[in-house]
Image (cartoon, rainbow, N blue to C red; front, side):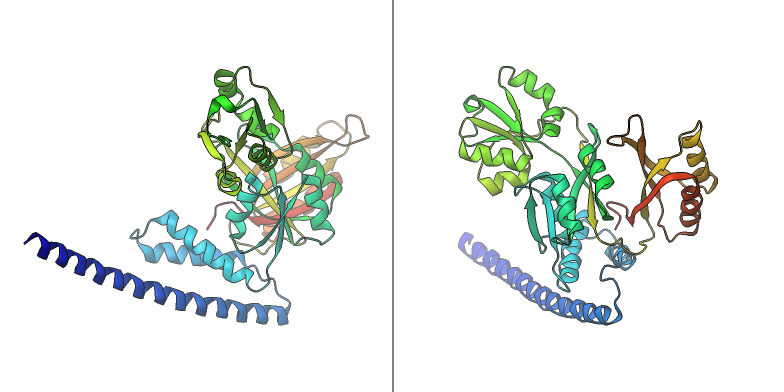
Length: 366
């Protein structure tokens, strides 16, 4: 009796697996059709000299899918799957080269994959300023750079690079950061030095002080460099991303050693042109103010009068000009929106320096 029951269960299992295989085959055929249609759209847009990336259209697709889903399929997984599909189809029209702070498996690399999917051609670059230079000179289509962290604040090398290079912001991506202590053996006793980028070292300083009080830290260019060092030297521990563990075949010593939960880094995607309106956008400016009392208040009053919501304002000193500053401003809306356009026009009249850095879809807006 027991054997008959097992045989019946096996037959039922094979029947269900057969149905799943048939569904997978249909998925594959539909994906092949979808990418062909996307390539046709790309050819039409090329003839009309239209931008291949239409953020409003993509946001409408995500909204329609979520509405039709009715919570039957896990929402975040659905968005992740279709993000990869949509991005792959769009990139099939023209595969971009994306530079990021290397080497492979840094958080910046991870942010790039989150934004562009796995189909882009990724190119590691040693410094943030070099990423700007590569994009400005047209050697890469896009660059991914960190701009601020929810705990440690602004990334000044990124802000300073905007003052030197002519690029446009094309997008932003938020990445939740969870720091892992890794090494070759996975044994904390083998670690004689902890290497990482200065930001992760700062974000884990209390954990390191408590658990490795006598172990020196070594700031390096990136978490990827730290992971490379750990892969070569069994006495080096690295604070690195989950992507680095697979890339460099390292063992996890301790997961999640950051001092504060909710650690998120905002990354910007830079390129030559900003995209069209998505309906939920940000606009970024770089401005200089006249040297007179109340200049900053006047600038902010202009934006307030247009009912423009500021998302961020950050000042940076101008190199070689003592006590002179430029201000980075992020505001909600697109430069094509009436109130943003008018507000920027009025703001430009009172600024000693004015540069529109770009308008782009807000992070994590589907």
